[in-house]
Image 1 (tube, helix red, strand yellow):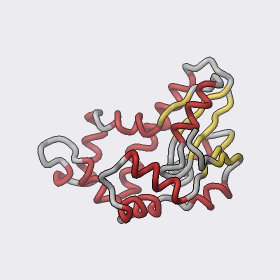
Image 2 (image 1 turned 60 degrees about the vertical axis):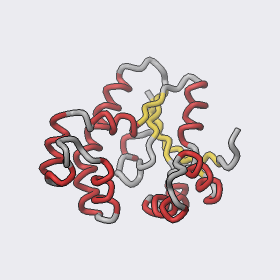
Image 3 (image 1 turned 180 degrees about the vertical axis):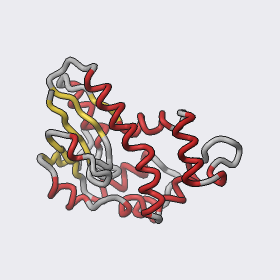
Image 4 (image 1 turned 30 degrees about the horizontal axis):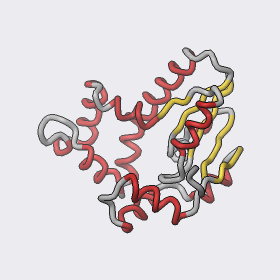
Length: 177
């Protein structure tokens, strides 16, 4: 079974492109959805509590905004969170992939390279889009964000140029179909 990774920065249109692969018979595993599910796992929550303290659990439940603020500019804190989440997401992907009958499977994730996950895949496909297009897509999806907040999220990720240089294949996606 060939394992594909579909990646690209925020607003490049990964999810839209992933649906085209689904239409071609390639099942897609959405890493973000799996990561969100993990926040319901008591073991994961205990590890997050141990790593970041009670301040991120103000009412007994995780405050995702506080967690995001903690890791946004703190590389060490981000690594702690990734060390809790990434191995579990990859284990879930491997389990899911083993249950598929297709010749190819795909994981969609914005942080394949940032997370060092490229070694798990036979081919890395990067979805690329220009900055103005990305900003407009993010604005439509998150109208509460200012341009400054959008740019901060974009710049927090690996530059698209670097992702493209590391890719096996690039899909240019400046036009919404």
